[in-house]
Length: 434
Image 1 (cartoon, one colour):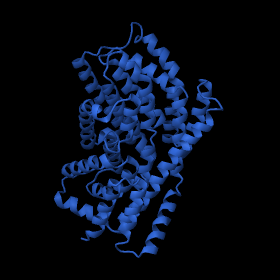
Image 2: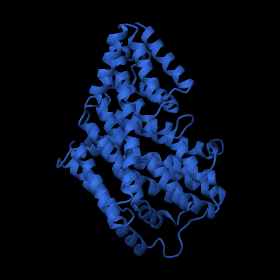
Image 3: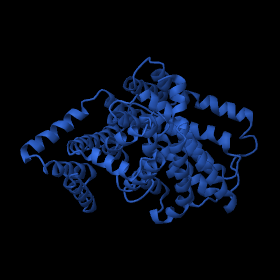
Image 4: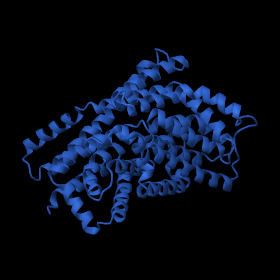
């Protein structure tokens, strides 16, 4: 087996990141250096550029800018306040009520907006000050907000599930969307358990006042939040029923979010330029990462790195439990140093052949991989959701680490359960036959 391309790839990529080169450039340069092991300079550069351009020429990828825009419209359109009010009536009376409200509202917001950073920003800015007033520590509030925000990347609609579909060679987006529901909810439940235990230890009481959590209050806030929640039914229901594709659904989500923002009177025509500009900047960053990662994926495949990795892993063990444990450990480590989008695009073609040879369903593996990398979004040094959560809470990473640890353990416990109980992921897709 030829080890030189692997060494060049690892050393150049880690070295470039270590000296502060932006991630997209680090990926592109290390991919080029890897190709130069066996291809002359001019063909290597032209091939890499061609692969990056062709990789972005995908109808499925059109869903990403639309969902990003829909998420920004929802964030600015007053939906977060209504979802929080609904969450208060459901779980506000329990111990650690505000923490549970944060987790529940983040799951709902994530399910609608599909953005962990939008959820962390909205929930942190609205609930953070309220939690401080109730006596919660700023660091615990930030830790709950950071970890719960990532559930939105597993619960659909989710851009990263679309990216995985592209990287895996066309796994059904509808099946991936359905597969994300139970794991995402399970992650939220595990986080709630930790929040309740922490709240009892610290003496944090329920938040709901008398009459705030009765049937009438639940019905009232549900009706108020219903137009926002209907987006889920329209988008996911339409995709599963075959009425429209995920890309078409993303455009419908933009139109629906825009109309709802005007109905709620939270968005006006003067807000639209800034919302469009923010969405364009985010889209440009995401698509640059995707283009660079597609180039690296091609270089990795050309140098037969997936086959070499498969041989090494299956040489260690052909036991599916052991191999999945090793892959989980690698992905948890990768997530610490790499953002979720390039990680999915780079490591899917490496690990997917290994797990499919062992009989693992690609849909199941996709949820395992994304859940894994979501944990990385909450860890330094490149955890984007960690930085947003800490920034909104006006605290420091060092202070947030301690309350984060038990929440990390809860997420890892949920990950192991999802990894080894495949029906948690595959039951809904099989039920709808997608």
